[in-house]
View 1 (cartoon, helix red, strand yellow):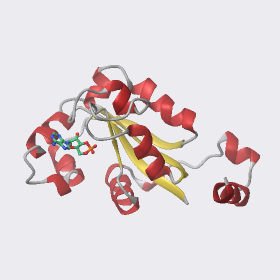
View 2 (cartoon, rainbow, N blue to C red):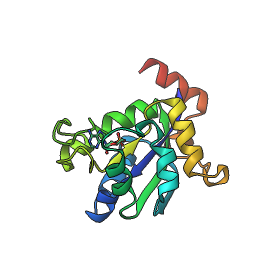
View 3 (cartoon, rainbow, N blue to C red):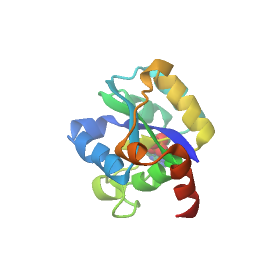
Length: 160
Ligand code: CMP
């Protein structure tokens, strides 16, 4: 199914100069960037974003880390994009994430793990609405879209 997912390149990714490297991985995989911006997130929006973690021992530290510098937010689109992106990102703890994943290759931390990616379709919808206005989600034809119709792409996705 054609899906959209939110990624956040966390302050450690920006400060370590890994923005290009990480975005490149998503682009090379074939995911389409339909929105992207840089922002400094305040406590209010971070508390909403991480509402499910409120009360956990790492919550305060997480909110403080995520507000410690600018982040890059993007919406990626593609077939099964939510699961594909989670797979590329790797396990939460960078020390346990598989080599070949973004966290596995570049992170040694559970908290400073470079990238956030939406967990499922309900979460993706909520997170995209939290960080992006409707008119910030852009529509354009990627090379793949230009070669194949939406029907053809759906068929290819079903059989391959
Ligand atoms: P992410 O999965 O993007 O969203 C929740 C974040 O909380 C997670 O990345 C980590 O950055 C952080 N996190 C999760 N579990 C822990 C933990 N046990 N200790 C510290 N940070 C954590």
